[in-house]
Amino acid sequence: MTPVLSATGLFTPAESISNAELVKCFNTWVAGWNARHADAIAAGAVAPLQPSSVEFIEKASGIKSRYVLSKTAILDPEIMAPRIPERPNEEISILAEIAVAAATDALGRAGRTGRDLDAVICACSNLQRPYPAIAIEVQDALGAKGFAFDMNVACSSATFGIQTAADMVRSGSARCVLIVNPEICSGHLNWRDRDSHFIFGDVATAILVEDRAQAKAAHWEILGTRLLTRFSNNIRNNFGFLNRAAPEGIGQPDKLFVQEGRKVFRDVVPMVSDLILGHLADLGISRTSLRRLWLHQANANMNRLIAERVLGREASDDESPTVLDRYANTSSAGSIIAFHLHHEDLAAGDLGLLCSFGAGYSAGSVLLRRKA
Ligand code: COA
Image (cartoon, rainbow, N blue to C red):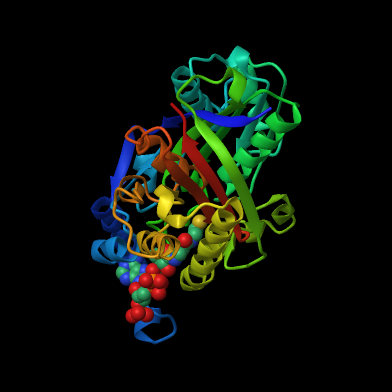
């Protein structure tokens, strides 16, 4: 059997935070902290905290705004974290709820219902619990048969999910596989870290991979997938169950997202462009025939460099669209949002490349060709 990508879906939270709103809150907190520590600062015992700036954020990242599920608490200088009430077990989990919203969008676009699914994969960075799997809750909510499981490869989770689903269709273990990428990144972001407080947003995406024989006419052929991992400490999050042994550790910054942004930039740009170029060469496809790149959305400068290395020249916005400005980094969902919002205009036969990269390090490349 031959796997194809038949539809994608998107859930976008109703609320968003502009850079100006974010920086105002951050700087209010910084001013308060510096005032509370004025004596120690005057004595030279501690360094004053530095303010953030809208100009820096836009120049360094390309991000102008981000969607979030809990705006009020994030922008409260006394809290600066999402406050999402815990739900009783009888109620659907928030992560499953936003995954179902994106899945319903994808299924509708493919003319399918949950009953057509054989498998559900929840592939994302930020799972809210270890078990029962979020994917099984989504399977249940959609009335799907078959089986479901969660997987986490950080920002590369979606492309790793696509290869897993494609392999399942090829092997015959499933004919119709739903991949959901619900990302509540606001929950693991340190909103008080000047270097990264602007990076992430919340969203959910969904991808339907089916056997070509049963897919709708207008689908995307999956010409090939390639995955890569290489260990690095440069993007890390140490939150976990073993921290329970040292409760004082829970509030430490390394129990949230931390990164060496500059090192990530330097390591990942060549790693990802080499991965893509090697993948294209092995498939016998020239880079000049690529109509569009749907790159992971972490940093606009990084995407510009990767696109340039892949195409051998600067890419236009049309060739490498960005959603970072509105959505910020949404971890595994980023490249799927870019695809979802920027594929309708491509013609039959057009080639496009979906690519993710992030913690691990991990990277994934998926080559697609529009059919019909
Ligand atoms: N506001 C104002 N200035 C700030 C600031 C802020 N919020 N945060 C940092 N700065 C300052 C720093 O103090 C530094 O000042 P100095 O030069 O006087 O020392 C300067 O800006 C440069 O900081 P730096 O962290 O080196 O910026 P950068 O240009 O490397 O951009 C990132 C930072 C994180 C946006 C960028 O490195 C990046 O996106 N890297 C890749 C990250 C990535 O893809 N991660 C994957 C996650 S899935």
